[in-house]
Length: 114
Length: 119
Image (tube, rainbow over all chains, first blue to last red; front, side, top):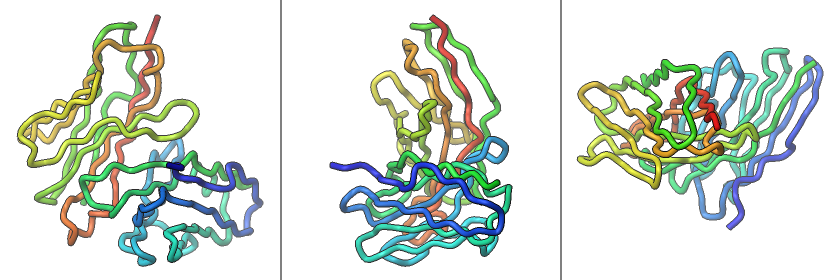
């Protein structure tokens, strides 16, 4: 069974640009969540999608958005990039996103904003 | 709101010895799950162990065990017989458990503990 796939692995952008990150969950998993990881802030929850609906959202500005497609694949978009958006963005999937399910993580997308 | 506190930024342990990584939590959810994940230098997060808030027994998975003390709101990870490959960052996390709980799809993570196993 293929794991969670995130593309691209690395990204370099400049301030003001926008970026789209992609996540393909494990087959059969319907919940996809996104996390931002930085050395100073640790792992911060961005949002969670289940069956194409955003079910939960973290405390991030509206520049951060996402969506989920009918095949459960998810994309995350960051508009008007700022230097502080430089981080490792992790995607995780689980079957139904319930509290007893562990998360399966992708390898992440390392975003550098110059 | 959910909060996870890991008070040990870094820990050292001798190979083959046991080590305990501390985790305390706070939540208003009546039912929740507690998790530990390992993140090696490669960056990928790996699930280690799960404990449900109503589970009567402490969870164990091979060399990993979770010392769950509900009244103290602590969920410490114990790694027995440490190996060099255990050197990594370890995160404690929690999720609300009810399907109708607004925290159900959200995992809250602690700041992590960097474990270094010495040969």
